[in-house]
Amino acid sequence: MTTRSGLSPKVDHYLRSYLASEARKEKEKRLAITLSRESGIDVETIGRLLTDYLDEVTDNDPRLNWVYLNRNLVEAVIDRYELPKTVTPHLLEKTKFPVTDALEERLQLHPSEWTLFHYTAATIRNLCRHGNVVVVGRGGNFVTFDLSNTFHVRLVGDEQKRAEQLAGETQRPIADALKLVKSQDRERAAYVKRYTGSAIADPKFYHLTLCIDNFEPSILAHIIADSLLEWHHGR
Image 1: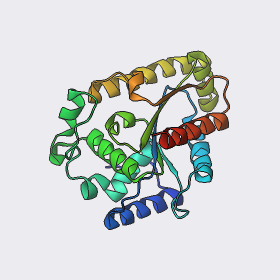
Image 2: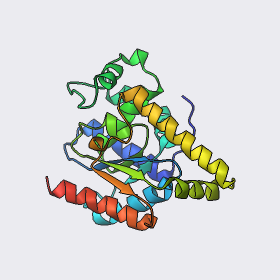
Image 3: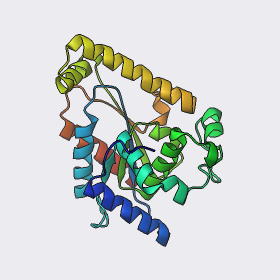
């Protein structure tokens, strides 16, 4: 597979720690987050602020900080470390996914029949099992729904405001940005439906759904992190 993004030293350090801990078969349970979002939401800024804040408020091994992984970084991880091949020969193992028969059928394929979706799903599961990671998109909440350490968040917002945000980021007219927001939302919904059989916005697959309108990214990061910790301590 082609690497679409390089790995930062922080992410590279995280992956090295991951492989070392898997080899030692550590039993500790670290937390993880999946982030699903509508198009035009500045999830990169939110993700960066979220991991920084989690480093401050969670009692973790100081040698292993929280990391944020978007689609390109997940694909880079697959390419460099081949985590699905080295850790999970068969994705489902003995666990039945509490999602849909369609997703379970897809994930039960032998590795020789896997597509990028299967490698991505296996990688996301392995990283979330390890913890201290925020994974964005790619149906992450669906493929990790049975993992007891993983907290699922959905970010939504006013369509016009999201288009304005995207227009500012990409230097394109508002009308074009609005078309792109609509198109990307449809594509993401179709991706999830195709591979999981579920609706991307179905609230039962999220612990927390947040409307980002009128919130600064730092406030959103604090809400997500504090909700994660309340959920964890309240179980």
